[in-house]
Length: 395
Image 1: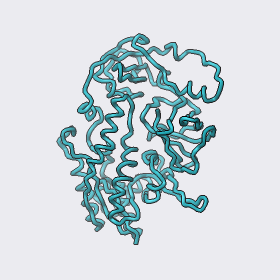
Image 2: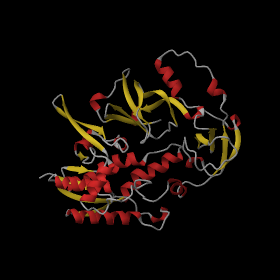
Image 3: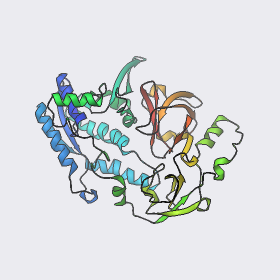
Image 4: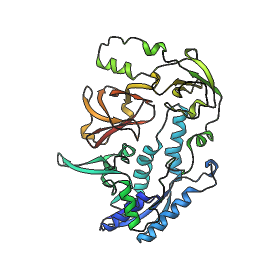
């Protein structure tokens, strides 16, 4: 009998995951990960993890599986929280959920599971795992979930072959309504529970408040860049090579205070991210203002009016070799090779047609249509048909 450790989060997806595995005849153990214990930075008096671990425990009792809470808050602080503050202070926007899967759920947590004699670790992600044999070796594939509204393969875009080999995603072939229906039939307490929002670890904490507790406020100016800014209308030079062209189009616009007009003040450029519209508190413009760039060194936020402002758009991005990751190592590109793919730069985004160009020092992703708010620090993931082949951090 194969043993599976399920990360029970106290939500409906992981509850149904455990239920299905038990029905399939696995020896199931439920573990709840406690990732946070520093009460000095939680905003509300509610203690979300306590509520969630309680729900997880009730589900485990109902399913008659062993259950325990594992405290991973030390590793979490080191690998996720410190990384987040570091990225924000550099003016980049990290994705803690992607990191949490690579560093915590499928690393620290997986180690604990294997010590408990587990053959697999299962999570309630909406994605599927495929398997093939290439040159006599098993190759694992990460496939999109069947529910288009809920496909979560993007969050697992940094997993490796070793991690995928031991992963199970039992609900990947179901839709969210089907999962809730199964939970109801099995009489699980989490059947109607709302999906959790916010960071994958602190529950009910909103990001800006969380950041303000570690990154000190620092007043600066908001500068609005006009739609006819000279850099937007410059004629495109002739390029000696495709690589020179890609480099040109992947370079972001650079702004100085005198390029626009001062329209307000902010409390710290490191709290803002490209494409953001809320929290600027500047009135008097025809259309809403969007953040088009943040300069954390000068502590200036640059905005543009309307969501079609040219400062928001680019069609090429770059990933350095150090930050490039192939789930399908057998398909990784060599310098000079190109590959047509579908790609996304954020979780909810519909897939976009793109071409990968491998160059000496990294990889260019060239999109067919311009993309709004390409943000350094976020992950770009590329797919072929339904399979996620690889990903990288936008530099």
